[in-house]
Amino acid sequence: MMILYGMPLSGHVHRVQLLLSMLGIDYRFEIVSGPTPELLRLNPLGQIPILCDGDLVLADSNAILVYLAKAYGAGTLWLPDDPVGAARVQRWLSIAAGELRQGPAAARMVALWQRSGEPADACVRAERLLAFMDAHLGDRTFLAARHPTIADLACYGYVAHAPEGHVSLEPYPNVRAWLLRVEVLPGFLPMPWI
Image (cartoon, rainbow, N blue to C red; front, side, top):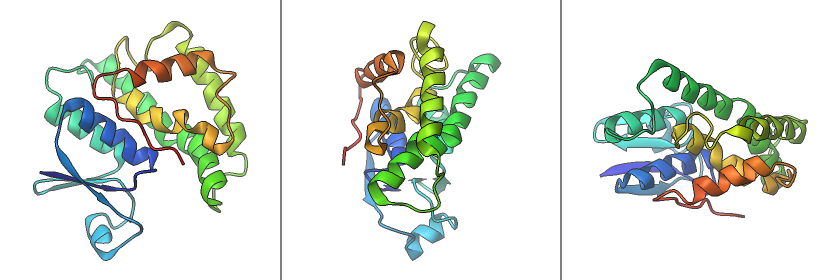
């Protein structure tokens, strides 16, 4: 059985849980609370999530999403095979690792856990990203394609929980509509609120 190491309140962990649920994959969730010796053995960077699938150990939520989509999502559209579709998904995975992490995720880290080292302008960055996403979703149903992809799962958690970082979603109707579309997908699993 697969093992997923992480923390329930992590958006990075949640995106992996979403895909595991939507693919119907059974797994064991091991809650970690810090860089334990076992965690550091699995990922010397000490970051979560970590997925163990047999002898394979994978770290980085976006890499795990790609692996799961390719290894267990045959016949699905979670990760398009065509070059343009794959590139569109990769763009949003990059945004999830960059602008989303430095904006909504960072604002949430500061508001909830007073995490130092986060960008001082995280709320401004979050609002800039949400305005971009709202415009992008003006004539689209999902972020990277006409159907849901791992791009949507990678971005969902920290956008949905932006209000926990004192970033309102009220000015972004297209983003709010997109969140609802993700939330009605078969196998959707909500991320816990604080």
